[in-house]
Length: 183
Image (cartoon, rainbow, N blue to C red):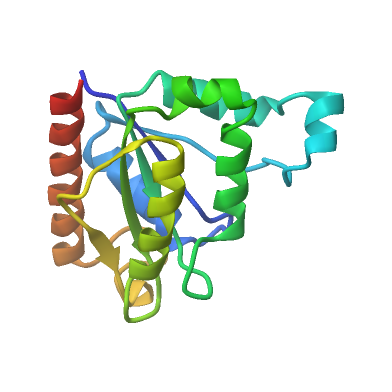
């Protein structure tokens, strides 16, 4: 069975991207597991040298390495990548010898939600250079950008718009199929 790790690039408790991760897990519970960047410290090579890789980073690296694909739900901050998620990716690529195990050839999909009108198009595009550097296998057959997200979720963080839920379902099914064909 195809296993995918889905992570949110936001730490905010009411994050629309975390809500999308939760919806993805609920729509495809046999295929999608939730990963987390919560508690990952700011990257500092001195800390890495003195303390090693933090336990939360090791846990997420192992989870990604054991999966068939990685699904990143990215917010868009100032038309680009959110710092906390980029920081997590920097930690996940440490030490450099672990990059092949965690990233090389791994199917990766990008999606995201924002209250703005453009979805997360610019953030998703900004991630492509990072994913190329890590030698991942980005899925380019679909794009999921959720704009005006503040109007599409209820107070409990559940998708309240049937069209958005249907687009998410189709996107996830396509990425699962891509991961199966890549394996």
